[in-house]
Every structure is written in structure tokens, then in C-alpha cells.
Amino acid sequence: MTAHDLVLRVSDHDTLDSVADQARLAEDLGFDRVSAGETTGRDMVTTFAVVGERTDTVGVSTDVLSPFGRAPTVLAQTALTMHEATGGRFRLGLGTSSPAIAERWHGATFDRPLRRLRETIDVVNAVYEGGRVSYDGDVFDLGGLSYERPVPDDPPPIDVAALGPKAVELAGRFADGWVPQLFTPDGLRDRLGDLERGADLGDRSPDDVRVAPLIRCFASEDDPAAAREATRSMVAFLMGAYGPFYGDSVAEQGYEDVVAEVRSAWDDRDTEAMAAALPDDLLDELAACGTPEDVRERLDSFAAIDGVDAIRVGFVRGASREQERETMEAVLA
Image (tube, rainbow, N blue to C red; front, side, top):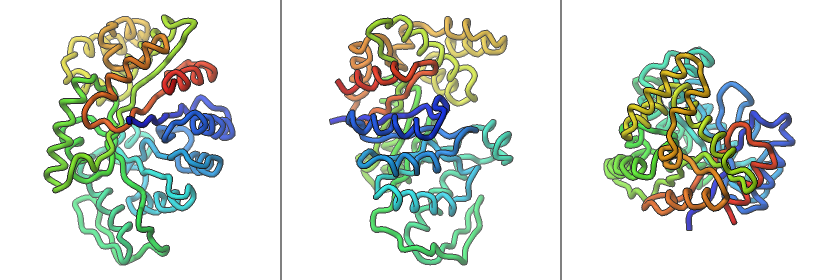
């Protein structure tokens, strides 16, 4: 049976108490994990330490921490401490992030991002193995110190957020999970081939990698049309304005003309034109919105893909807390 995770929009919450309340609701409703993305707002380590302390069974993940913002040894320390704080419920989410976040927020040069991510995973695993850490890589050169705490037999799994073929191959070869976003079902099936190739290179089974695509969801019984338009606006923004990678990925799935039109509208900062450029058929391939039945039907099309282990339900910007709850309940009905 396909699991269901929930990605919180932490920036929409005024307090950490509110974030924890929604995580507890997710736990009560039966979601398997909760997570949230980290950009320039609250840091997700502190946020989910609070969530972990106020929940009992739901898994806790970070989507995603950037290797440009924290040293790999610090990421390992963080993961092991979160593992302890949550009673073994933590998964470490990593990704290359974007040039804007790396350079304009973390003050780093967005250089060789996949190599940096690969070496970060290597170093985290070296810390997990205990003993003295020594690593001589192209990006990181460190050694001579050891993690001061005992390392558990089951250290936190590592999930990788990735879109392109080489990045997904890396996830299949070295990570414990893959977190894709903005894929159509056909696009996801195609990219799973890259994951399988990576698993083969790592002499492991693709079944060892937890595949959990993030799908933007908005269910409304009273006003499904408004739910669709809010989702259309957010998906178009992700494609056209939120860094280059989402739009490039959708274009490579066969929608070059749509992405070009959305980006052209963003050049004029015309968000209404951006949304208008996203046709219904593509919206329904990338997201799950409309009536509760519509949402479940679209999610089922992803859950039915061979190799998908979980669906990550992501909220849509502008949804009220009540509308988010309706969406949560619709998904698990």
C-alpha cells in the first residue's frame, strides 16, 4: 500500500505552535511523514525538532537541506541528533538547492553541485560508520576528528531531491530515497529508469530507494474551480519563476512551448498570464486539484506507478488552514 507524506507550508504559520498543531493533525489522520522545505525563512532543523517533540509516531523529514549551507559533518551531526530527538523517526533530506539560494543566501559559489552533493553523502555516511572521519575529495578535504557520540545501528536514511537524469542516477546509486517534484506520470516513469541505472551502478536494488513524488494538492467540495485556479497559479510560478530547474524539467518532459510562454509572462512579472499559459491537461498531469474525488483520482495515477512507495502531499499557496485540512482529509478518505 502506498504511504502518504505531508509537506507543510511552514511560512504560512505565524508560530511554531501552529506548525506543530498541523503536524499532530497529520499524525492523527494517518499520514506517514511530515516535512517542509527550507529556503530563507525558519530553519527546518529547529522547526522539526519542535514537531518531533510534540508528535509520537509520524515520521519527520527535512525537504531539503543544502550542502552549500551546512558542512557535511554538521549535516551528519544534525541527522544523528534529530534521530535521537525523534526516537528514530528522522530522514535527512538533501538536494543541490538552486543558484539563488546558494549564492545570494549562503554566500557560496554554485559550482559542481552534483559533485558536492555526492561528497556530502559520502561524508555523512563516513560519520555514520563511527571512528575517525577522513575524506579527500574534489570539494571536501577533511579528517582527523571523530563523532563524539555512539552511532546507532540504524542511522537516519538520506533522501535526495533531484530532477535531472544524472542527479536521479546519483540518488539511485548512493541515497536511501528520491523526492521528485513536478513530474507527469509518464515523466516520472521515464526518470525511474535513471534511478534504476544508478541502483545497478551501486550494486543495489531500486527497491532499496524510497520513491516519494511531491504532488501539489488542493481539494474543495464547495469551490473546486477556485482550487484549480489557485493550484494553476502556483504550479505556473514554480515552472516560470522559481529557479531554472523546475521549468527545465517540465520542458524536457515534452512541454517546451508551455514553459517558454510561462517564462515569457514572468519576464513581464505578469502572474495572471503565467497561470493562463498553463493548460488544463498539463495542470492535471502535474498536480491534483478540484473536488476531493478529482484529487484522489490524480494521486491514484501516481501511486499506481511501479516503483513509487509514497505520495508527498504538498499544499497550495493561498489555501486557508481549513482548506488544507479538507485536502488532508480528502487524500486519506
